[in-house]
Length: 433
Ligand code: ADP
Ligand code: ZN
Ligand code: MG
Image (cartoon, rainbow, N blue to C red; front, top):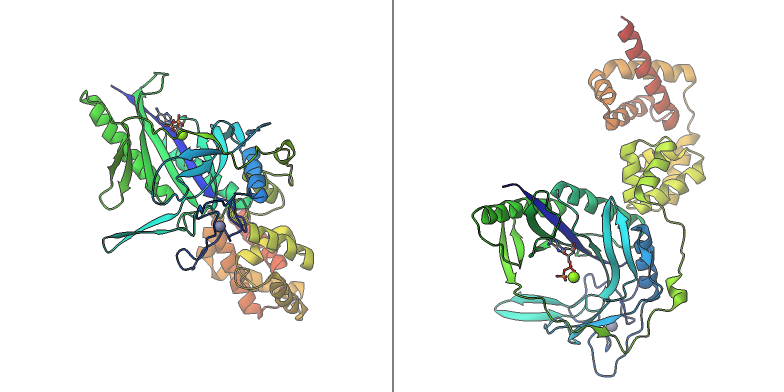
């Protein structure tokens, strides 16, 4: 009997805002004492009233649009009621019947909904005690839910990587899994190959903190379910985690029937206004469109990808090009290779000024550079071969050699162009021979 996996994703991402979702507390509690970043609203003290964070709403709209969703005409917050010690109000403010966005598509997979909610506090278990830290309580979260239309774990990984790039590039979230600002849940079941109906159960894989582990967990879970079904057993509906060391999924919670969250509209918040929902923001491009733009400007595919994943680097590249009249491709290469300093550690102005100082050096004449470039290409056969195999860094190595030999007396872009020309001239003559 052949089975086909059915997989759907639920992704939570922390929205990049200055303050929390419904109060004025800073959103970022990094390095703070537990419970030092709270107020009556996020601690749910009696009488405290929530006020929605407009930036969080705008970013949710932006993301929903980028994921191809329809933006609702009517959207509101609802209370999701359940009891757990990390939830001070006894309910989470979330969205249910009227999310911000619905019915999108991303990377060929239908996106069911995109909605906004608040985070809970954090439970810390130590020395036989359970403690609660409410610093994270009320931090804005966007939830993205796909339809169950993945069947290949590798496609899940590809989707998630592209989603993370989108989140970072639109500056919606840091999407840093180690800091918990991107959290993944996958639902998985199996059906007979060719069958169209959804299986009558699903297993939720939770608390998995890397794309690699999620893909592994999905693969072993597929095996586990396959064995159960093949021997005529049923697969229980439950939540499972992944034991990274043993490489197996483990039961965490059985879900006999759906939790009754008793959703109802949040009486302390009016629905989002039409005007709010019509938020346009700046024009957004998908990561692939941006990569294509860079490639069209002569940036290599690898470097284009680095730029799209790192908004501060792509902004730095634009600023560098403007300040120095270097091309975008040249500027990107200079910054990525940290040739005049590290943008992560110093302001772009410093790097620009160091570049300008280097440009003022007396440069070698064209003939002198040619001689030097010939020598570098001859002396470094293996780097030349690597470059010809498509290894871009090999060219940077050759440039480094040339810079060293010339005492920095060549303009990097010019030198790069020349090296490429020399390499190609050599290969075309040797091909003739
Ligand atoms: P629930 O009501 O339990 O929250 P939903 O229908 O809202 O279930 O779906 C939650 C997630 O589970 C979605 O990502 C969806 O794609 C996925 N999902 C739903 N049914 C299945 C199934 N049979 N197998 C795998 N994933 C599923
Ligand atoms: Zn607060
Ligand atoms: Mg659900």
